[in-house]
Length: 207
Ligand code: O7M
Figure 1: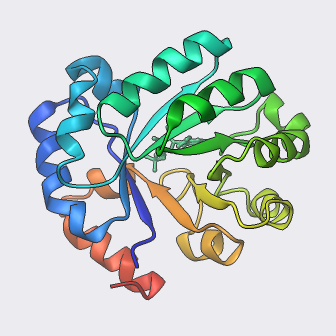
Figure 2: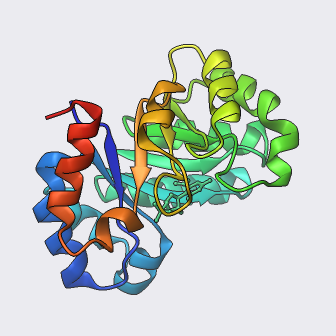
């Protein structure tokens, strides 16, 4: 089982495709964020989906109708999952879940940096569970918060950024309850990204 979600935060088309092909067998999913989509268009999601599960990290944070329009575009382009904010409230979250169809919806309930969202994390978890999301985004570098979120979130999958470049430890995050860790710079800035992924998988005891 692979527990790494690779954060493909690059601009360049060829670099993105080459990294996707190279790493796809050794990661659980590839997370695509605005920098890549802004430079290449949404169709890059479909292209990468030929190699790996793709999670569209669009951190959707708008009214219900706009959330629906964004979610539909990710779905049309074969995304496996989509990440949405939840602080915008139930109506907005419902719109994402309903437009997502078979796509997995991950709701962000706490960030890897301190933010005002920290004041509402418990409410956001409860609402996300009531709205039947598939998983939550929780900080892998703020271990007490991650542990608390794990304790409140039942069977929901937790995906956790903040490992490596932001100071978090991959083993601490998994021990605190993350199902998957999101890792970007520590992999794509390494001179040998595949070797790096394999060594992280070894630390986790994953092949
Ligand atoms: O490993 P890094 O620090 O290079 O990359 C971390 C990735 O996780 C990067 O794509 C961020 O946008 C994302 N992320 C955070 O770093 N912190 C958060 O609180 C939330 C996310 C995220 O993935 O949200 C879904």
